[in-house]
Image 1 (tube, rainbow, N blue to C red):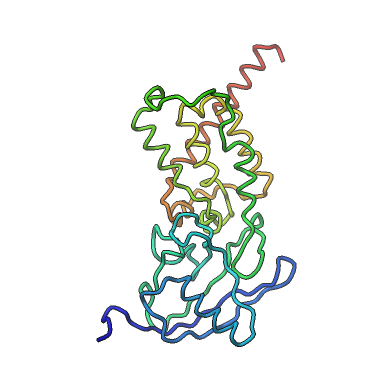
Image 2: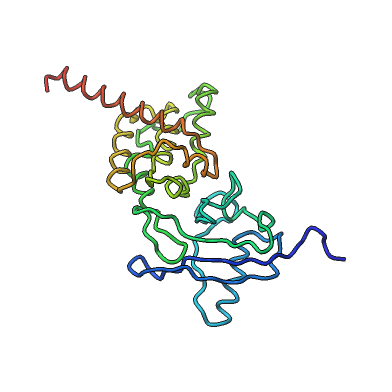
Length: 264
């Protein structure tokens, strides 16, 4: 007796195919039949790729790693929604039960100048790595590791830092913003460390370096529409952007006062 919950659906996939960043791309239509509603979205694409390889065609290239909703590398657009229609869910954790039989699904990569297409649905997100390298770390020499009880952190600060640290750097915020802004990603990393005692020593320099690197990567300005937070699979809050702006303003004023006191 078959599982009544394991239904089969038919889909039409319109997938962006592009061989490299330097070559033009186009949407190619594929028909999928008998797709199990228990399959994940990436498993469905795996099935498509098996058919393409059998026919001697190039498989659809997409990025992925953990397939557990942790790394975020699987992200792409599904019918105009980053990671698909299900809130707080990465593509790898999206299951085919979220779609009706006969649905037409349009799959395309993140669209941003700072995220050049590698091939098909895969983009180069190393711009995020460079923002982190600019200041998203703690380099203070603290000697031997201290006991956790020696560095008490107020629970509200610990909770806020944890919520900011949940950002997985998938790029959904950039892809969803009409200006392709990286403000939510950058601010989450700035807020995370600024809230912890270990990160306070470098907080002034950190925010300047990371914001400067973000701008140099040619991400757009914040659109203030909040699309980034809505699309975020980890529900990173917009309050991080406000906090980063305050950090940047405070740092700028501090530097100005220090320069004036030194007679510069």
